[in-house]
Image (cartoon, rainbow, N blue to C red):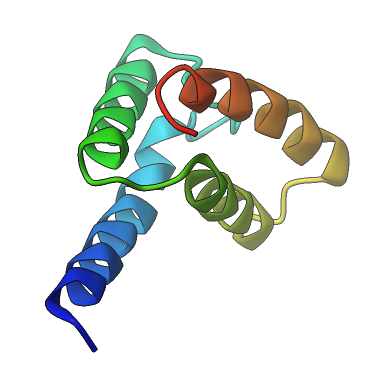
Amino acid sequence: MSREHDLKVEVLDSLKQSMPGCFGSEDGIFAGHPADEKRAKELRRIATDKGISLNEVLQIAQEYMQRKNYIKEHIEEQMTEIRKFFSKKLQ
């Protein structure tokens, strides 16, 4: 594998580890609290700087919510907000 591929894998792993901090621990709302929003903005900045696509970030967010066993309706609501938030900077 190429060094570029290895670096992308590292960035994606880092984003996966950071994603939970973007959600409320009690309500599971994405960037609903100022601290969660700050972490989400930092995650978005890293994704933008490292060339991570919108679809890759959306997949990470969806996988996180599925692991948390959130109900389908909650996941759909949050994915709408997450898409809006990240599509400001990512394609």
